[in-house]
Amino acid sequence: MSDTEKPLLIKRYASRRLYNTETSDYVTLEDIAKFIRAGRELKIVDLKSGDDLTRQYLLQIVAEHESKGESVLPISVLTDLVRSYTTQAQSVVPQFLAMSFDMLRDSQSKMMENFTTLPTPMNPMNPMSGIEAMKRQQKAFLATLVPGWKDDQGATSEPEQPVKAELSPDEKQELDDIRAQLAELKDKMSKLGE
Image (cartoon, rainbow, N blue to C red; front, side, top):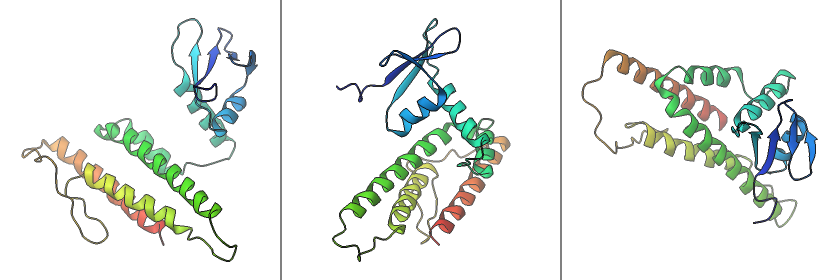
């Protein structure tokens, strides 16, 4: 395994300075963001305790970019993320976000692949094909997540397991909330393709 394939180890000293173990020098959050943009995996650990601090620093990088006006996350997404920490749905959110970003990366690489294999400059590629593929993948994910999910054509997914017959009022309310959020997400996805 080459050096660029294994995660870059960054150690945080007691002074909170970050040390790049490969180049033996100190780095900033912006340096870490550059490594990530270049496709490098990394791991940030506390030198004394050995605790993994990667998530904390990645969130800090996102927060800094958002506070500088480099907004990537719409308010509605941020609001939904905050809500997900207080509901039973939080177990679904990480899986959904990871799958969505995987689909986005996949679509981007396919679009770039299509772009580089075009025979002539006069043959434009369809920019919506990546979005359409992402929408299909998200619908398939939602169909497995929510039994009875209906897609745009009215097709209904079949539940893999029997649904619990008796739900408590709180469970019913949470389920209704999740369904409302998924319906809103479905509506937003359909508007993307327009």
